[in-house]
Length: 494
Image (tube, rainbow, N blue to C red):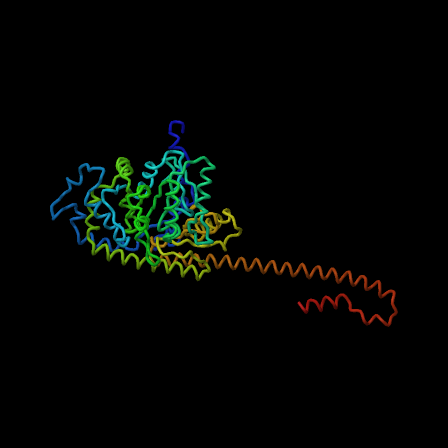
């Protein structure tokens, strides 16, 4: 071990989190409808598989994009050779246009301000390297995506200070919570460089209200720090309220061309909105030319392949297709989410009201043996190992209230979702039956104990009675009832 670096051997990656451990258990015993029907169902993976059937027909109709051709002529050599770090201009234009479209064209984006990265993971880490030094801190509202412990901290050495949000207001960000986190960072002698949010939220599945965004912008303006808005779920909003990008709020407040304008950065990806996580397409958008320049240099460690850029530029430029795809995607997400919520409600489990994302924030506090994170882990282990469903416990998302879980619904078929709900229903029913049996047993024990105590009292009374009978005249004896008669009367009454 001494031959390796401290970075290689440190434990800051977060691989021992229950979030990743659940994945490991799933991989050992994955559910398959035909080959392994009793396996573990994966509901811990935020992946959008609901519209892949719409992408394949497009590829069949556009063979040049997949075959690396332009007007039927091969451009293989052009794509195979080394490409500039800046990325294909055509793809960057197509990507920023798509970003504008899924935000209702309320804001527009400049392709010269975008940096391509190998997924949102790379984008977030690159921004950490650009904006903070080792030992600096970013504030993050809880609960937050468990992977941030890896993405933001592991290689950069940046610290995460949680902004603790609670269920009392639907886990919304408040000024007292932000200020408390800031003070906590100062107490730890950490220099706060910014705030990072996910909007829509992972794991809540909710969009941030405009007043929350206003609050955050004012806070970073006052403290002269950065704001990173991870908007990779922007295109998954399937019902009201609609999505509001932080860039839209800046525009409405006439903050463009100001210092705060340059301190707000957006992370985006095609992994969730188009369901293409394997293509590894992410992006940083910043109005600060220095940040853009630095991020481009760092992007050399995680570029998007030429073939991928060429294929996706053709797809995104097909406006008719992208519009129809996003519309159908919203319908399918809404139906799948509704099926999960209604199914869980029938099992006595409620979810936080949500309008976006690929998951629900599920309240299982009533199933805990005690209001502790130890009880949460015990419940999670039962669900993974006995119910055979992998979900993410709230503690892995740094939620401060035990008993909340992130449950994904978009990475499976309708039939698999129904099976998962049925398994959870059966599990909750078994807990209810055990609880009822336990209560009945306690009641019987209490009744038996009370009956025993009463019999002892009767015995004492009878003993005193015998002493009294010996002292009174015979004429009074018929008025006394024997112990056996009293006991028989008591049993009959019981």
